[in-house]
Length: 286
Image (tube, rainbow, N blue to C red; front, top):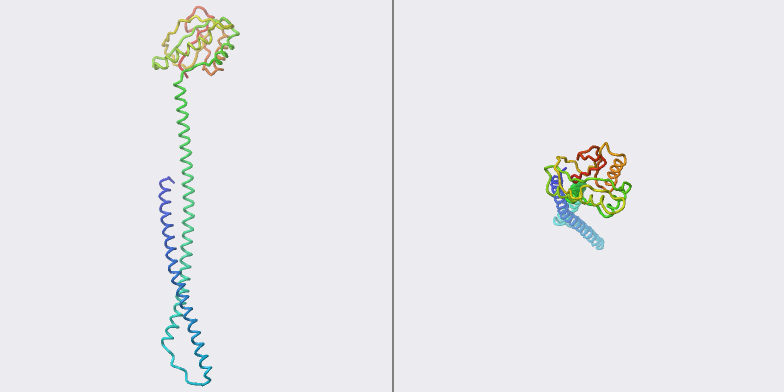
């Protein structure tokens, strides 16, 4: 049941319960009236018993037998009235008790229904809260992904040191770096590619022992080859020496270790006459 329907049903039920409670409260007035009637009736009966006793006692004390006095109609009416009051009072109390019992039974039923509706409402609220949490988590994940997409790739000093250690087994390896992109990419994407290319170039080429030898230190161009493949592509010629192939494979592995997407490619896309030169193409951020 929808939350609005639950609210409507709960409101109707609350109204019914309030009506029953008012009805029960109204029966209390009749209970008081019935109780007073019984009390008055019993009091009159006690009065007439005492009055009759006094008359008998008076006659006995005289010791003279005489005709009885004429019965008084007023006394008879009062006695009948007292009996009627007692009967009506007892009947009223019985009736109020029955009606109160019925109303209380209805009230218990309504309260049970109200508890069930409240539980259903709580369950619906929990479901809605769960959906809201899922939506919030989804939005948070989307926001994080957006933030990640806006941040440029970079390598910390520790990551650069890890890359240098990884390639140090192949000192002096020649390589060329290029940035490549599709024609539909934004200025931000192109800038990100160029800046990360420079970062990667700095990591591979340095004065430290074991560094590689770059043949494209001044090459900061961004050829638009129409290749939209993200990450870094490491190309090695199929005619290259095994050491060069191993160096290319090692570079791909160490880049992936520092969370930079890299792929090993076989071929010579730059048409370099030197088959032992590794071509490193830096593409868009994944």
